[in-house]
Amino acid sequence: MLQVQTFTFSPLAENTYVLYNEFRECLIIDPGCYNASEEQELKYFIEKEGLAPKMLLNTHGHIDHIFGNAFVKNTWDIPYYMCLLDLPLFERAEAMAMLWNLHYNPSPEPDHDLIHGQVLKMENDELEVRFVPGHAPGHMVFVNHAQRWVIGGDTLFRGSIGRTDLPGGNHAQLLDAIRHQLFSLPEDYTVYSGHGPETSIGYEKETNPFF
Picture 1 (tube, helix red, strand yellow):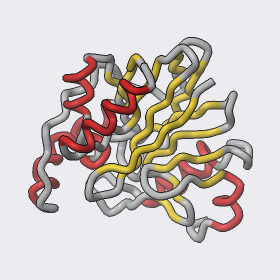
Picture 2: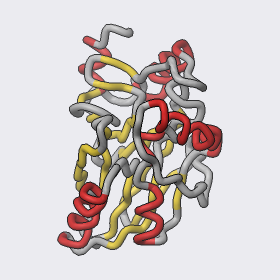
Picture 3: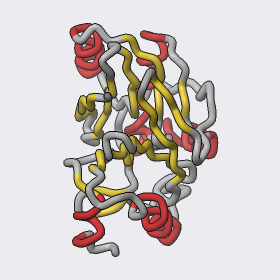
């Protein structure tokens, strides 16, 4: 059974997730730690809980979700997974950092591609990978059916959706992907978003103004 630990990092208030099990193994998803203090906050939690990181996952390649990739890889040297469709976003990351007056330690390239329908396993736990493009060309979400939740990145927020005005964004594509890949899940599934509070599939189907 996975426990979900949330950190909110960087001036862009991005949610970083650490998923860990009873065997003290963990996954790190979208490390957005921006400075040394935030890096140490993440490291302190992992060490305090006696966790052994096994995988680094990115839902997508926007800068606020990859700020801490280099730190995580350099610290734990674990396999790194991201959909390769988002690699071109890495090329724009430094320009985006300059535009927003942010510093950026370049992310390493992924060790492994993420593919729709694959299942990531850690001991007794499984995450189904689903392709939900529109906010970013290669955006993936991670679904835990056993515990009825999804790490949704910047696809679906409480009362909103991911922005689609950045390079590679597509509004119609995002709406269609949410309908088919997220709203097809049972209504009681919790959604852990890339920014802001958690929500549920049922709440967003009933109240989200974009649908």
